[in-house]
Image (cartoon, rainbow, N blue to C red; front, side):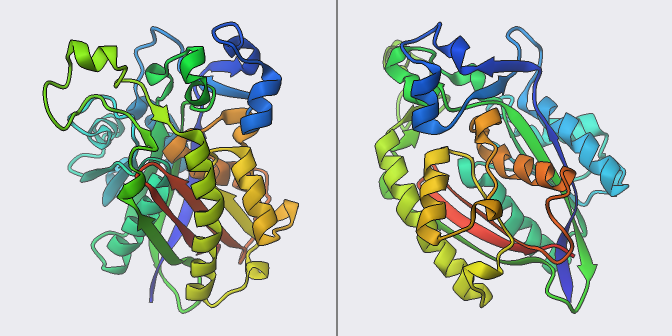
Length: 335
């Protein structure tokens, strides 16, 4: 049977380190206020004025992952690029990355599932590999969100959270009779909550995308109903975890590491308590990186691999919830 395994990982963070104290100079906030509500202590942003885009962040992480896999760009059968902050509105960032890598004629697919983008990407890659349409895939989660932030007291709930970065995995199809690689996945959406986390630009339902009304209403900045998202996350994440475990015929005790999307440390801590997961079995790095949206899970996975915190045959659960509303999870077993 063909299995989808993660051959290698890579991550890249931009050069500008932004501690909470810097944000307190721009708006009415403080390190204590941010840490208490989000768990975030610092994040990385692309330096202002730098000619750099989301695909450039992805390129740096991709080079690391490809080298670790022993692959050349021309070996790829597909590039899947998850982001909500593309370099430009059209074309997708996958095309820019494909060109810069020199992966000539390799198809590039962009997906716009925000915080669950990497989870959707894993399921897509698994489907391509199991159907034998691809054998070697580069899956990217990358965001350049600092350029969209309204750095004011009015929108501080959003401004203090989001950050820049990229995480990449090389996914390969291998023949194996063992239960390894991507075991199962479950994904959900509920458009009833589509207004809870949104950005109006560069598209609108009606009228011109760029107009005085759009600018006056600040539709080009992200807006989030923080309390709504928090309540949904602490209920939906345990529910989808139970679904995943049932589908995989597993118990939570069978999971060696949970890697949740890094939206808010308080959400992850509430999830840990609800599911009775030991502290050493759930990984958080939002304290140092903030919320890099589609990049949070692959960045965390890369850190775990680099620190040798995962071993052969370990079972990992990736879970997340984000704009849409979308939520879901993937169960993965290391070879």
